[in-house]
Amino acid sequence: MNILVLIAGVLDPKWPVAPLGDGLPERAADRLILSPFDEAALEIALRIRDAHSDTAIRALVAGGAEAIRLARAVAALNIADVATVALAAPWDQAANARELAAVCDDADLVLMGREFGDCDDGLVPPMLAGLLGKPFFGRVQVVEATGAIRLMREAAICEEWLTVAQPVVASVTNDRRTRLRKPLMKNVMMARQARIEALTIGTLAQAPTGGADLAGVSAHAGARAMVDCAMIGGSPEDQASAIAALLVEAAR
Image 1 (cartoon, rainbow, N blue to C red):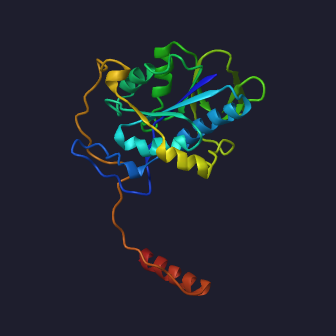
Image 2: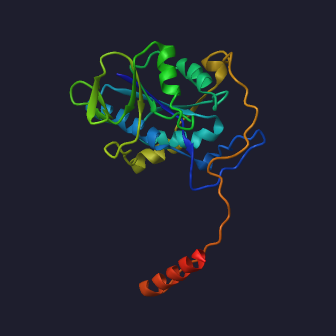
Image 3: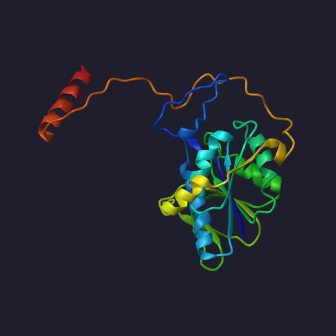
């Protein structure tokens, strides 16, 4: 089986968002991390490979040069075929789906986070499935890979299972049962030297037509205001008294 994992990456929420001149957030290499949905998609692919040794995994990380560091983190999971893909309009779901469709035709299973950089809209995975003419199975939580490969999602009080018997596009959500494993140190060292291919729009497909132009961004989600803070030391009783005094002061 050929599995393609599409990874969007997100800005680390521990850091303030830094806007660029066009109003979009800066995707700095040292601020990009895997989203919980990226991690779940990767773990499902790895579990399938654990059970079926003939499985080949390819991973594409959205972004240009800034995504190489994140791509190496993916390669450290013993995934040899990892590349970055520069998307022309990362905020345009339709454009993303059209561009990604050019690299998915030979995949038996396409896995991607249920949000692919679209602020909780969840539109890219089903759009991609429609463009590829493949069935879509959304919000996957668990995989069962012993024997036939089955994907599971929960719907209300029911579990829905899909046997992967034909090419499928599946979006993945985070679940405590599908937490990404830690890479082996030897694989981390090898990933630092791994060749990361950089795909561009020109090598994937012609520039998308009919897309929208972003006029600007007026606010930045996650931007943080500076606040006063203080370290509270001493015994637990002293700390409790200090916190109580702060709460009383704040309530006045």
